[in-house]
Length: 177
Picture 1 (cartoon, rainbow, N blue to C red):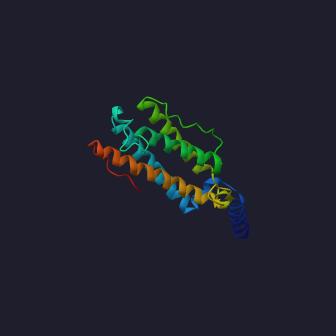
Picture 2 (cartoon, rainbow, N blue to C red):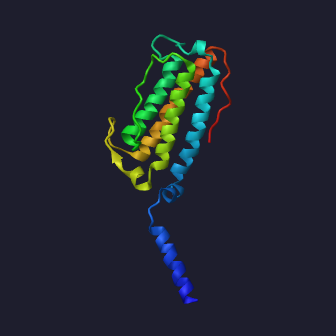
Picture 3 (cartoon, rainbow, N blue to C red):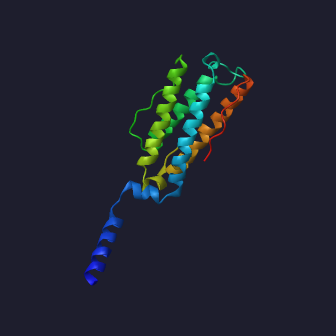
């Protein structure tokens, strides 16, 4: 009986000493919640991009604003920049290309950016989340950068919803948490 307890204790101690990303993420409620939220944000943004007719991709509500297409490309570029510059992605940044002409190409770029960020979410461990990085707005933890990433894309998605409404297109039902 004592041998069985000792073996069980030994196995438990070994398992706790193994640094494994899955264990770290399972114990970090923020990563778990943001992973689900990010997946929903991608689905929602892609639905919006698909619903807007290609003929309105160059639409700007006023000259000073980005076009619908530029907004989508800006979202993608920012996701790639934050992921690769601050969140340890090993993927290369794809420059924002406003010369992209076709709706399908824009949607492809957008999907790849969201996938890149999701992969980055999965590769971060607890120690890395709390590390402070030098950000242009001042020092921030990677955890704060993740929150910024979500906030920034939400900000621009809100703008393109207005673009759709100005073209009398009903946006898809919101996909939140």
